[in-house]
Amino acid sequence: MAENPLEKHWLMSNPLLRVIRKVAARIYYDTLIRKTQTFGDVTWLGKPVWQNVQDLWTLQEIICQIKPSLIIECGTNRGGSSFFFATLFDLMGTDGKIVTVDVEKLHDMSHPRITYLLGSSTSDEIYHQIKAMADGVKGPILVMLDSDHSQKHVAGELERYAPLATVGSYCFVQDGCIDTEFMYRKARPGPLPAIEEYVAAHPEFQVDHALCERFVVTHHPLGWLKRVA
Ligand SMILES: C[S@@+](CC[C@H](N)C(=O)[O-])C[C@H]1O[C@@H](n2cnc3c(N)ncnc32)[C@H](O)[C@@H]1O
Image 1 (tube, helix red, strand yellow):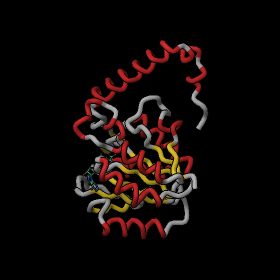
Image 2 (cartoon, protein in one colour):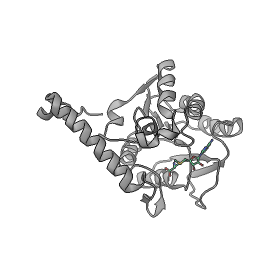
Image 3 (cartoon, protein in one colour):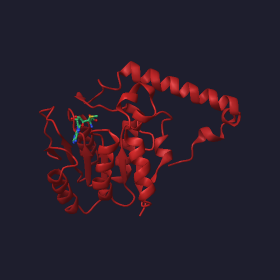
Image 4 (cartoon, helix red, strand yellow):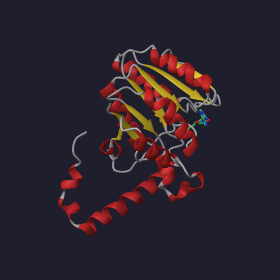
């Protein structure tokens, strides 16, 4: 990612203005969450996709850059994010496929690029199915964890699925905002401690801070784990 031009701006060299800017960003983010009801009613081509639209744009940029042959998604929900990936692959004309898993079936969608699995992402049965798909793929693999955001579950998903991300690609862990935003405090501990522990124990992954801060405010602090080795 390119350098952050904001860092060199004269407004950021003044410590007081730097603090004011940070406070303003937090107020904007809080307003954004409340106004969109945590992005619960966002749609992509008419289908519900439960994503912060700024983070979704970053995801689009990375998918276009990496051109994954497989995206592994934990947390299908109403199917919008996997549909988003599939339509990006359609537009890009690549061979990309998606496997997505949820404990509940909350949609009646289908797309030739998408395999829908039902069960817990951390169960042996689901893991072995996804691992077999990953083993059959020659190109890049991108992983996105967006299911149960509790620390324990995210830690379990990281152990299983992060190693399936290929070198140069990412394991994208969603919703670290649970641990930073007061309004989500009841869901703590969330993804952040799981991410921090995983990265500390796995030097083959590094947090891509520039990507996390791409649009200043994000639902996914420390969420973009780049596989570097
Ligand atoms: C935040 S939603 C996913 C949103 C979806 N990725 C999107 O962008 O539209 C989280 C989903 O994770 C599912 N979930 C919860 N626990 C799970 C588990 N153990 N394994 C798989 N999915 C789980 C929930 O049923 C819910 O539909």
